[in-house]
Length: 460
Image (cartoon, rainbow, N blue to C red; front, side, top):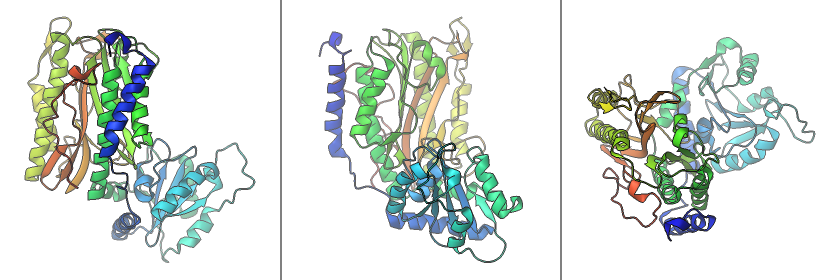
């Protein structure tokens, strides 16, 4: 199709339909977490609870912080109300839900084998549900048949997510001295992935690759940011992604000051730098892809400097991760390698100085039932332990081209490369197939490209 005709709904629809049709045969929709695996998860957490003397684990969730209960009970699609989960030291967990969202959570409970109960404390605050059957916390706890003796409740969700009302509910029943924040009980266990989890992440990243190709092909002058995001979201939905790890990112021109801003109705202008990002949720697990491009034109040599520096950082970090996996090294060696690369990096600013650009965040973070809010497993200077036998992580390397909003330091305001990778034993490879430099694919669905050199399909 001529370039002049590529900023049209018809072209965007053709791109989306073609990518869905081409990708669907590569997906295996039977790859799911089984009831048996959920039961095994409960047993592992319960063993950790017994070791620490806890009789009950409590975790909370919402549409923002859904990882903990998703992992424990398959609640991948919460709706409306906040919700919770009680896991006794023996037996099945109970999902605590409000009346409206509870209908959705019932579906998850049936799938995972968890129990569910409705509590008035979880309903929308100013509504009345006169036909709902609510239970009290006391009634639910009585059903759990907890062992006699001192009751100690471990809060497995991060304090930043736990609503004050949930905390008060627990303290009123058990006493504040018996409610302990113990996030590590759950977070360290769900950090280590099963082969089935790694296989689901592989499927999620097949979806991510296809959807990102759609974004690249339709990122043309005159399109709105939401046009480009809409193509990606159609593809993700068409390939079975039921929601997203974050709002689809399309930030063009001055909107790159937002770094991870969602798409708006701003029009893409020829020559603007654009950051793109998406994260499909597939059977509860997350894929990823993010890159920075220029619309309508290739980046100038000056603009490419920051982008190439990020690509160099990616190579250093992923190769350090491969070395750490092969040799059982602590993960902080990966961080050290990335920081050493940056210490030797000097780029020319818009004023002609040679300075080192700043990274906005750590180079690797954990993933799973959230895109990045697992609470444990990010690589930092302080992670003095090796990676688990099996993990799914995301390499998220970026450099800022500004120190203050509205004041550019470098010709490119923000450059990023983010992919997902898997480790199984001593092997560590990237899930995604797209190259680090995707500029040749901008505006052209038929452009040839070489695969990411660090990609290997997960064999599980």
